[in-house]
Amino acid sequence: MHHPLSAVDLVPPEGWIDASTLSFVAPPDAGLRANLLVTHERTNDADVTAFAVRQGVELAGALRDYQRYRFEPATIGGREGVRAEYSFTNQGGEVVHQHVAYVLRENLAYVLVMSCEAAANEKGRALFDWVLASYKVV
Image 1 (cartoon, rainbow, N blue to C red):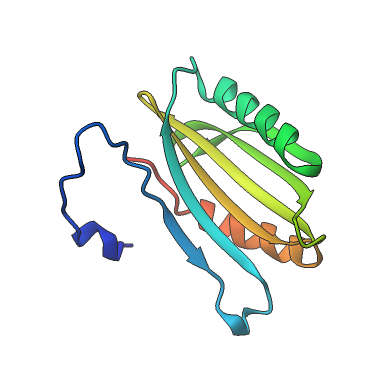
Image 2: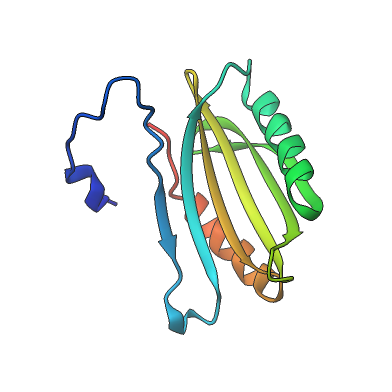
């Protein structure tokens, strides 16, 4: 997919860090309140597992009722990665499930996250698997 923002070219102020993201939301008629987000950040972690473990510790300390259901090595787009799944309670009191894929390329960590409401978690997991089949960090 060619992302519309790839047509944008600009020079930010000196020293600013690129924190660009890709973000998608499910259409209203999908029967699923969900979104996909791809982020990236610089890391000094030695490998993708160390990065994912550190992220999990930070999330557990920041999110209410955090529960991890899955954390395992995976091949993601031909690269060594980690898949994780967890839930938390948001500020509105709703339980949110997140499906996550972590990949490193050089000193950048790429994180693909699908968030969905708890009632639609099975559908969300199936959609995440579908998206993950085409996901690559090049």
